[in-house]
Every structure is written in structure tokens, then in C-alpha cells.
Image 1 (tube, one colour):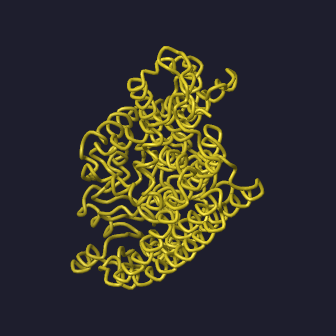
Image 2 (cartoon, rainbow, N blue to C red):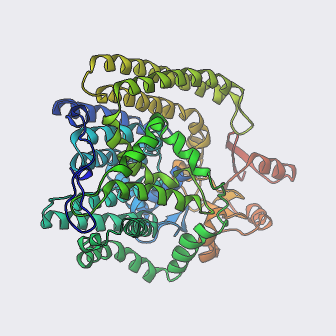
Length: 578
């Protein structure tokens, strides 16, 4: 087992001074049938709720709409959003979502399917890797940790780019670890490394240069710390680079040929300026992601420090490679990299989750029964305290998100906490019956958090159906069907990320292009630069629709602009020219 053997710097094999693990830490925790049934149960909980919620702004609506437009236009090279060129991100997820729409139709669960598949596959890949690197018990534990981590759970059910990126970076990491095992045959090692290079290429096509920059930087830092220079001879660099460029290069060449403005905007503005400058208006303190990980891995927090120490204490393999230390470098560097960025979003550090799960999973089978019992009791008390705190949700609310929505959501929160509490008590009962390992009880505990995230995440629909604008879509679509096909639909000084998807119609930007600034700059004839110019077009033109904020609507109504309201909610008003 790679974590339990090492060699001295001079190449001679040194004795293993690490005490041999107890049988409970390495034994297979369940029968194969049980494992299959657990995977099927997780699959049901993971995939069935995908269509139970409307898409929410901004990422979900944006990437669903981009895929819808790609499918309908047939242009698979130049991504567009709301009809405008959109070069902020590479197209892999847009391709996958468009294919999903082509195969299964256009809808919410179809828009989330690729994200859900990569999240679910990430659990299996992490478990498989730990099982091969350490033992089946560690593989089982790693899968439990990642599947039940709220961070991975929730991000796996929202249509954002970060889950797809994180999955391909996880495959990069895991293929590297599996290729560097002691005793692996050269042919097998080469195949694993080719998979590593291919996964990096797909990570680049998911979100850009970080798909190769971050793994590359981790490898350099690890080599410097461990002085493991021999590792570089086992990377299959020449053939690996051929694999990488064969996958990553074609789209970049084709889109640059069709859009000469692409390279500067994509690489300079979106890759470097986004990281180095505050221009994206997504600020956050340096400790921003500390809270993300504390909440994101909440069920396993008490094990974190001991898991880190356990990984650092593991000796090198016979070939000099130290997988535990590589995982620690991966986790620490990527976390610090995004913490230093001027642009921060909750999902940015998701690529550290598989590495953290591998570290926790390697340690979990070694936890004593007494320590695990204290862990379960502590979390049962925590859930009770959380339920008491959830009472105060009924006090929240504003004009955009009325108080009644928070009161409705509180019911879902109570149900989620109640289910998790009951299953946590069941985990305590399982622990009493399990004498050899804490893993059966850990499986029940993980199920408690999977249920908590699933129920509470589903309950978010009380907010989602309002923010999505889907409730207004039938009236708008009926009006669009009545108007001429070329009737303009204006988006007045706002960018609605979800309404175009639900009404199946792009919108003409007016006055404020928001994140479509680059697109309207490239095709200025497709937008209206000022409100005064739009008012003139509205008064002089034929049939048209327009969306605006309620405040903007009241302002135009006070100016007696001819408008007839056809749909409205707390966030938007859609009007027709009478």
C-alpha cells in the first residue's frame, strides 16, 4: 500500500516505522451487493430532484440559455448569450448542455444533468482512487465524505461551470496518483498519465488556463518541497503534451479564425485581469473561502486536523513519491491561490474538495469507536441547535424576497434537520452493533447529511420559482406568439439571466449591457445605447415587448410612455406597446 512504504533519499529501502494499521482500518466494510445498493440509492437521491427546482440567476439561467441558443443556431464554435458573442468561458459545458437538450428536450433537469453527472462521477472516482492507493475501507470512506459534503452536494445540483472544472481537475489528480503507484506496470502507468493529460485539456475547455496552471503549479511546489525530481521522468511529457494539445487546441484555433478579437479578450481580460484586478466587482476578504470550507465540509470538520497530520506523517513510497503530501499541497495551494484573487465566488475553491475528501477518507477508518461516538453526539446536539436557530428565518424578508417565502422555506429546513437528526440517531445505534469498524455508522451519518442537503436544496424552490421569472413565462410566450416574428423584445437597463431561457426568446439590451459589454461592443447594431434612444424607438416603432424593473416602470409610467403590463412580479415588469 503506497501510504505505508518509503525509501531513503539515497534510494535504499528504509524500514517502515509507522505502526501497522489495525484490521478495522483496512477491512472491506461491506459486501459488494451492499456497495452496489448504496450507489444506486445515492444515484436516486442525486438525480431524481434535478427537475424539482426552477433555474436561478445568474449562472444557471446564463449557461442554460447559452446551450439553448447553441442548439437552435447550430453554431458550436462561437458561444452566444442573449444573442451576443460571449467569450468569457470555454464551451465544454455549453456543448454538453446543448447535447443534453438535443437528446432529452429543453428543461431544468436537462440543464443540470451534466453538472450532476460530473458531481456523481467525482464521488466514484475519489472512492476508486483511495481504494487502489490505500485499501477498500479508505475508498469507501472517501466516497462517503465527498458525497455528503454540503459543498460538493449542493454544487452538484446547480448549473455552474465549477463542478465540471472540479471533476476534470479531480481526474487529473487521481490519474496522477494512480500512475505513480509502486509496482504499476509501465503500460498501465502510461495510460493513467495520458488520462491525466486528457483531463487537464478538458479542464481547460471547462474554464480556461487554470485547468493546467493549477495542477502544474502544484506539481512544481510538491517537487520543490519533497525534492522528488524522479517524478518528472514518469510524466510521459512528450506523448502527454500531444494528447493535451490534440484535445485542447482545435476549438481555440477555430474560434480565433472566426473571431479575431477572441484571444485578447479571453486570455488577457478574462484570465489575467479577472484574477489580478477588482474589475469584476466580486470582492471578498482574504479569509472569504475559510467560511466556505467550514460550511462546505461541516459534517467532517472535527476530523480535519487529524486527517492532515495523518497524511503528512505517511512515509514515501518505494519510488520516492508521497501521495499524501501531494494531496496536502493541492489543497493548500489552490485554496491560497483563490484567496489571493481579487474576484471571489463561493464555488471557486470547489477543486480542493476531492483532495480534502481523499485526506479525510484515508483517516476516517482509523477513528476509534469512542471518538466517533462523541462525533455523532456532538452533531446531534448541533442539529437541535440549528433547528432552534431556524426559527428566526421567519423574521427575514424584503421587497424583492418577501417574508412569506422565508416562512415557507423554514418548513423545508425543519424537515431537513429533522430527517438528519433521526438518521444521526440511527448512526449511533449502528455504532453499538458494529464492533470492528466505524464505517457502517459513518455511512448512516453520511446519509443524514445527504438527506439534509437534498431536502433543504429542494426547498430552495420557494425562492427559485420567484427569482427565475418562470411564473411570468406563459403570459409572455402567449403574447410573443401573437406578435410578428420580428417584433423586438427589449431588456431595459437590466440583464435578466433566466427569463430568456423560459420564454425561449433573446432580448435586445438597452442602456446597461452588464456582462454583455464585450458582445455589444463587437456588434453595436444589436443594442440600444441610451434610454432616450430606446424611448424614441418605442414611440416610433411597431409592436414590441420590454422588460424593466418595477422602479423603472413607475418612472416611465409617470412620463406617460405608452405601455400595457402583461406580466409582473417583485423583480421585473414586462410590458407591451399598446
